[in-house]
Amino acid sequence: MKLLLVDDHALFRSGLRLLLRELPGDIEFFEAGNPIDALGYADKAIDLILLDLSMPGSQGMSALEHIREGFVDVPIVVISSEDDPALIRQVIDLGASGFVPKSSTHRILIGALQLILAGGVYLPMHVLSQSSRRALTPTTSDSSESAPPVPGMTDRQYEVLLKAVRGQSNKAIARSLQLSEGTVKAHLSAAFRILGVSNRTEAVYAAAQLGIRHRADS
Image (cartoon, rainbow, N blue to C red; front, top):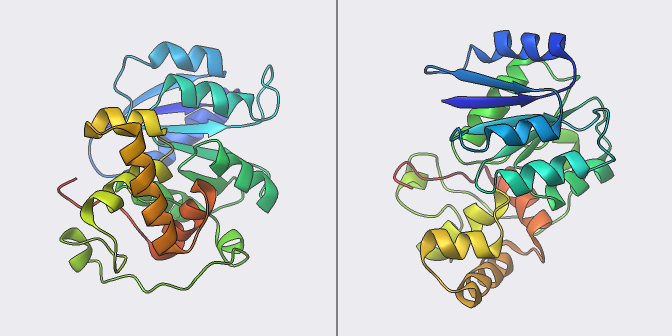
């Protein structure tokens, strides 16, 4: 597994490397002190990116925007000293797969990354408790590997939804699944209706609350 750490503090990156050794499997680390240097690893088949938003030379969300453009299909986890719900919503809007406050314990961090690597999304509990949407009951973890965890959602709708909440654009989803963009939009619209949400950001929140993740064979 290849992890890319993007943070301007070398000491913080070193600390992350030690903590992340607890993740299962062999890990190869790549490091960058800014978004521009991070793009130099775009050809390394990165599996997961951990990104600090507050770096010199990056204005606001520009760091996330640059990384998202350069790593279209790679899940991005934002790690920040801030945990304002409005900021987190903006991060999700820009395609991040998760947000972990720097105040979190290392156990929370490891658990969050394991969830995201399994195809899920992670948001802090205080944010999830504030989000409002129609209540849905997920299936058990055993059955989630053989059927979508949301009643009424087809396999294809679920597959498209998963890619959308991981930050992939309609164009990228269409390319990977060999569908037209119109078909992707139709599947997303249906999935959003079933979840009781109106856009990708709300869908990410819903997915996090339901514990939605990729099935083992996807």
